Length: 263
Length: 315
Ligand SMILES: Nc1ncnc2c1ncn2[C@@H]1O[C@H](COP(=O)(O)OP(=O)(O)O)[C@@H](O)[C@H]1O
Ligand SMILES: [Mg+2]
Image 1 (cartoon, each protein chain N blue to C red):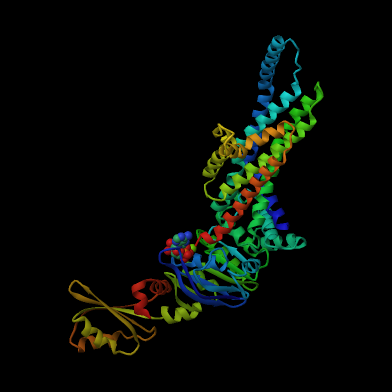
Image 2 (cartoon, helix red, strand yellow; image 1 turned 30 degrees about the vertical axis):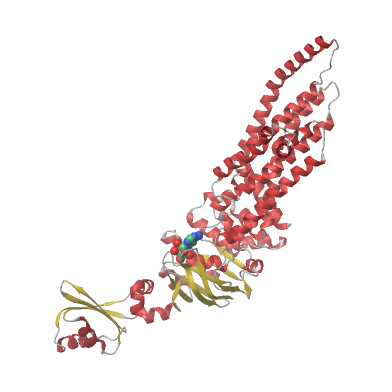
């Protein structure tokens, strides 16, 4: 535990002196903020128009839950931006360590490989949580003026989903970073893999077949959509946690084999 | 303290290290001397548990480096060929981190980092970021991280590599200061290095140990010998037979040089055999064109031990 904390603290400290962490957080908040400010209104206007049309056709007036639309839009967008940002956070984690020769120091220290893996993972996750935390401000702003009453349950389940999604991306990113000395390669490959998991359901044109169902299940974003509708489904929880654990396990194996692969 | 037995390491084709055995006793400083590519780094990586050996064993404080790696890693301080530094950290934050992962008790961390910084002359730079340090200072940080947890054994891979002469001197003094407290094994491809710091030298070439002794004995044995060059007209075998019977001669080599025989005779230092050799050549009926003598420098001893053709002649 002491070792995990030591790795965790060093890693987090390094993030905060590196320009990458600050640019990633800055860009993330800028994009999410801008979209929130400008994009949302046009979306609401189109929604209002649509509801009006429907109301005219059917003869009854429908209510529009503006706060809910805002929340779901924002959280959906935060997830998409995470997809681009997380690879930048994880790409250097092991790759740089190998390039600078500090891996040799870690591997000849009385640490287990698992301690290294966990220390790095939790520091990445902490940074990610710090990255998305400020978006709460946008949501709380909406909540303040909310009428009808703000969907708090959906807010918290969405954030739970966003953190779980981040954990998956980080675990995958760290694994890929452990495979190479080149952090740019690590970043690009991570992005590609994450994108695959993101859009894999597109290939499931027919959800009726078994393959279709598997592809649907593997889509990271479909599970996330459950969370943004306030549904905390065990299947989704299991899916995210399994993928995260798998990423960590593979990283652990990658470090283990590093000791023997150099043969 | 360190026991290496029949260590062999192959990276696929050919052996990087072949059947190496040596011992380092407690408190000793041993130099691991060899040209680039001799297998020094490979051997050190095996001893530290970073690389598995193909065959053979290595033990540190009685623990097998492959079977009881964690126990071994608790007891060693290791400076790899490139110092393992985090450039964005300050010197003392870095050393505190190292102390933590090397298992120093929390209460002792400040003491130990101060000790390491004092021993390496880093106290006045303790708040500097590592990336702002000069090469020499970075190397000191590398050595500091190898001793911060007070390990039984300190393993330094080319600690003076890439430093300027002043920095080399500083590091050498630093190693001398450490010598009382730790068992040290250091590698280098520079002969002077081991002469001045080590109690014992293991010379390695092409993955094999070619000599092992105190620097004094090595100098006496080899650097003590003298060389005589002769230019003779005559048959090679006959010349060798004639000169070879003179007492005190170690080796004779001959090669053709513009129709004449260029002969190099090696003999024990202090025994000036020039007149004897000259007399023998002439009385045997050969024509003598040139005769000159030279002493073997230490550099040449090393070269001699680490160049293949001459290794055979010298042994
Ligand atoms: N990772 C590796 N893969 C393949 N060959 C290697 C590797 N590391 C070293 N070698 C080879 O092993 C030999 C010994 O190298 P090394 O131990 O680095 O020597 P030294 O440290 O004495 O310069 C060299 O011929 C080198 O090319
Ligand atoms: Mg080397």
